Length: 146
Image (cartoon, rainbow, N blue to C red; front, side):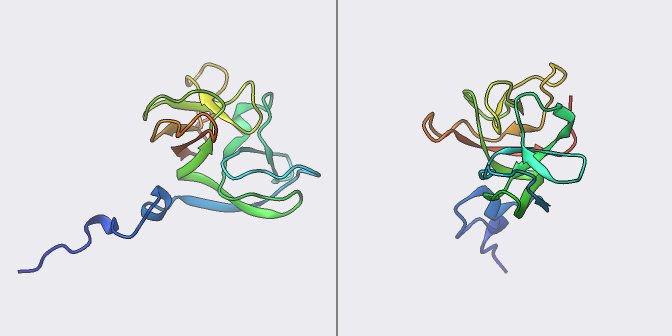
């Protein structure tokens, strides 16, 4: 009789992205002086390059979250579907909170409501870790828009 030795591959992993792989796509940054930080929401411009999602960018242009820091003009990975560590602009008290492009902090995701004008790019998988670091795990869903 055989036994399950490593259920769901959980042993030896420390973070959610080690256990469940999302879809990441390489994009070039269109920023000229700003580094897009890991966890920042990003939007796409008309040339197919990415920018840190500003508070006024059309929510339908927000395509995902930076999987790594991306220097101005460089190419880096963006999570467009799956788990990602995201920077939050507000308080996320629990898992299951709809996250939208922040209307007050560039690159951040806030509590949101689909159809409320800020779109819906993700759903939280955890509460905000601490107010000082401002990260939480979220499930990114590409193209959710407004």
